[in-house]
Length: 295
Length: 308
Image (cartoon, rainbow over all chains, first blue to last red):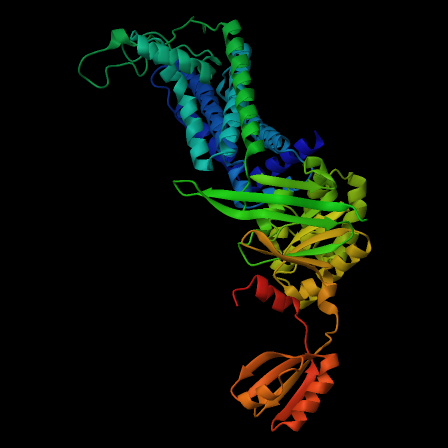
């Protein structure tokens, strides 16, 4: 275990050295920029301004979480390839260190950095929420953070697994594809054509449920009724032409509460953890058998 | 009999290249044995299969056929605890200082922090890097980097040292330092497997040499075989012609060369006297008479490995 943690610490340090922390600064700036309009404009409606401020905080945290997941994918995809390219892996694997220990250390290090990044975003969001007078719904916030943490675990594990066999670019691209595939699987499963349905059901076994964001519900911010006309802010028929108002789901109004089934969410989270472990395990098996051609 | 530290038997390793995955053999039925306490040189041109063999020993590559045994058992991760490896080019993480580099690799080798605190300063001093202990390794010159690479290989006091071109890129002073360290380690009973292009280094430090070409061992010998005085003599003769040659029939000698009116004869100590006596009776001029220089390591290398 000591060696695994050494590798993890080394990964963490190398990320800091890679100046990826500048991403934090960029992210914080982005969150503030997103909140700026709500500080200076009241949109002619105090209630609307209050709702917009709350949404700026929860939306900022949502964006931040997505960036953390993207960062984990990026770092996971680079995990093995850069070590091979720079040949730093030679002196590490010439030690009594199993290849799975090396990969696990990488996985832990990457997850730690992504989680620390998430915590930084959370702290900034808390500060912003106090300033803007918003209050987080703790149970939904915990669920959202759990989803992000599990997505970091799942996708960094998958990216590392793919990086044992593929170049960093291909490993990263395939992982990102996996992020978007659950939507396709849902479409296929719901298709009336039996062939598409069968394909969807099959893929459903291979492709994890993926990431679900509940950040929009972390700060209840129902829009006041009759804002900007009929449907609320942003719901006007801005594109002109036929008004599709009837097709668009209603924006939560005052008094509406998020409908979250925590049992289902827990099952999804556990399933994702399982998929992450399986992908990572497969990566370890591949890496164990793989020749390391180092020139 | 000394214990075999490295035993490679019929090692075959190929790489597949191109769309058709055509196999290219890097190592073909290579067999060798290294006994405990010896310094063995592994020499050969670029692409001969030296690094492939070393990487197979270390488990980076899986053999297609044949076996690799370390310390009498099949090579595995646990045997790496007893090995120190210096790669040809030592690359480490750019954010580590020299002492942190050693700390990291030492801990990976299972050394306790207290042991590392005791071991690192004298080791850096031995490598001539004491003043650079707190400098980032990325700022090191190539020579300093090589010495740091050797330091990390020696740090955990391994029984077997595998050194891949340890003196390449070093200035004469650094080279001498490294060769001295290799000899010191040999004196301490370590086994050293040294891959090198520099034959003079091999002659100065090694006990045994394996020459490899195109993935096969083409020559293996103890270095002592190159050190002995030859019992043969060279006699240089001018005004040489066919008639003279005919007069020497029945005498025991061979030709080293015969160009125009000059010939270089090779004879044993016993037949030297008779041959010289006969030559003084003939219309030829006898030039230099000297002990025949035996084949050097370089001659042998050129004969078995080189293109010349």
